[in-house]
Image: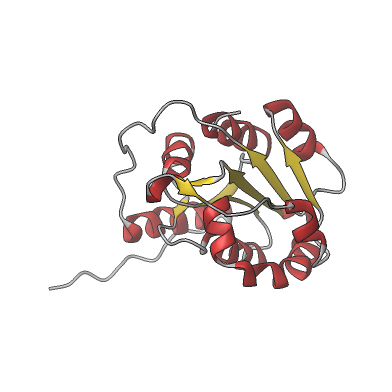
Amino acid sequence: MTTAEAVETILRQVGQGAVVVSSLGRTAEEVFRRHPTALFLDCLGAPTPVACGVALGASEVHTVCFDTDGSFLMDLSTILALHRTIELCGERLTLAVLDNGILESGGGDASRSCPLDWTGLLASVGVDAVLAGSASELRDALGRSPHPGVIIARVENLEPASGPEKSTDGRQSRDRFVEHLLALRGQTAAPRATKS
């Protein structure tokens, strides 16, 4: 399964009416093509904790997080809070880690130097994780009840990433995300003060 297939499958199944938080690189490009109001974080280790905060604070909407193996592993301290966050958010939070085994945005080095038992790692803190190596396995995991805490989607991209299409910076991404979240809540953003 490619990154594009994983993103498409997840958004088709749980992305309608959701707020989306995305990691960087190819993942962000694929999310941007399908959900341009996502919050794009260009900081390794940030997507999962930020998505958890959004899910806890915006309890009336579904939050979808697209993290990557390199990013998720950059901030393992996050897993200590995942069990309780998932318990509080339940079906309103979908955490997907797209695992290609490399730091693609950082030049393609391996994201780890030893084998990793994702399900064992997450089970050690009480989090149910499901591995998905194909789009059909991913659909099955997303349709499971109760909802898995984390879905590890194994991706492989044989083609190099295309050139960047995501033309938003962090501020624009934040503004679009907030406007989308407020619209889902039936609210509008207050006018921004302009610099004179």
